[in-house]
Image (cartoon, rainbow, N blue to C red):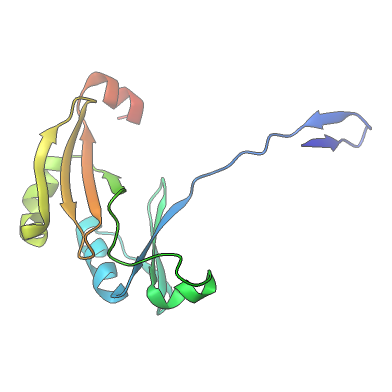
Length: 149
């Protein structure tokens, strides 16, 4: 985009995109909101009975009920049918989080804290709708540098 300045010269303005949120669609919004509040310790701000946001410094996890789908068109999303995305939260100590949440996670555990080849120690589990959730802590020098910790 080219923009004229007051002096008449032109300057190039970059059109920068900012990834700000991921939205989960659910048939049971109260249950899913409670779950995310419990595992993160962060209150979800409910804007309506059908839409809320869990805000972190880096990104927002939005939660919408199936009743919001008509606003986007017909059959644009299906609740509890995610098989290709992982919702990730960086935490200070993934092992401590696992010990704290072991009873909450229960049978939804996919993988106990494990150090991955890319340098993160990861805990993988499913939310009540079956979405994959990863709590991770950078542990290698390269991962620590990448995440600024």
